[in-house]
Length: 90
Image (cartoon, rainbow, N blue to C red; front, side):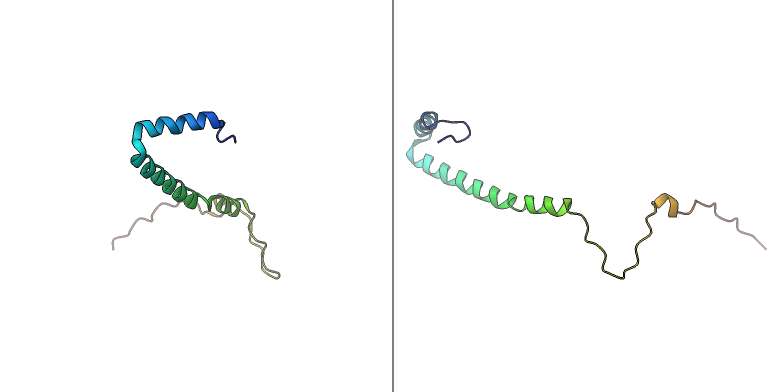
């Protein structure tokens, strides 16, 4: 057993110190809270690999017969700014 590079003796030592510091009642309730927090964290992060794959996936090809879009940058298609026309008073 090699959990987070902690051997069985180190893990046993950590559990004994926690038992001495917290006591049996608090150790059980603390372990329960930590377990619930780990479960919530896993549920919250389980969709991340799927979302990353969707982001990295190329866009789907256009359907057959669709007109291809013109590939021009926004600078090429944007019209130059114009000054407002002066108003005439008659």
